[in-house]
Length: 345
Image (cartoon, rainbow, N blue to C red; front, side, top):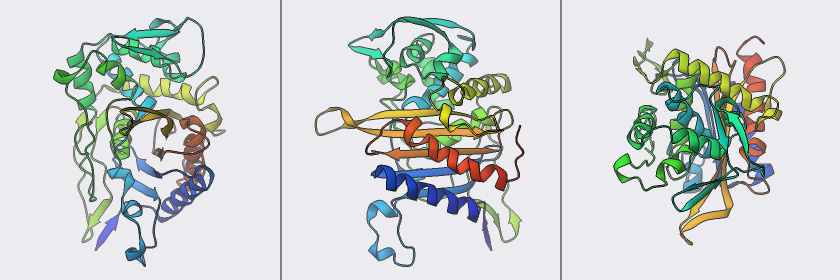
């Protein structure tokens, strides 16, 4: 008498895509989430490594973990969407606001630079997101006071459980602004120095996709034949800011964006790549070889009905979200869009 929102065909596809990611990049772990961002219903939730449900006694602890809700990680550049949405909401920037970007940006004792070599340049906020500029995003965050930036991080649902109706959810870890060092806000703005979970990031991106409302994700659709009522949700940003952010995230999959090769002909997609260094406790510093590669996006960009998140922990042979996670996002959506009868643009 328990009915779930999961779709068996989408679940099978997500599992097969993660199996392909594992075969190619041999990661320590990975997860994929497919969600309807309009109401928070989970259509698929897959993890790697996995196990034989007929023989759970033979499974490793890592395989038994639901990484989609229980994996704490630093999100990297996917978090830049939160930074920008907060600055837009406070009227600190518009998509057209231009920032002068030096090659290196000194913040206290840290030097911020972009992943790609470049000279000094000027970019509008829309291009800063499309090209995933660290320097540009930090300069955007500097338009907000620490307490205000911190308020946006918490309003998007970070540092607390989403309330999803499955066991094992972690809450991440985010310092309050009272505990910031001189470089904390700069780190957080580009998704380093704070811990989140895949389901928290999916819920946060749903805010941008659905017009500004944060709702708890869920897998239980009905009990005893009675539809489970959906929580009302809470408004985080205005419809205008959500629409502006969606439009800017389209640029990530457009020409010159960090995931242009993940585009799907006939559909406008929106999303964000993430490539985050992993903090190595054995050396007390960020690793030069261990990364989390991720991609979160939704389709169609102007009226999102599907959201897909892919998070890959410690891939081998490649590290960038645009190379490791974005193709998996594309493969899932390539199947899901026609399967769900979502028409091309």
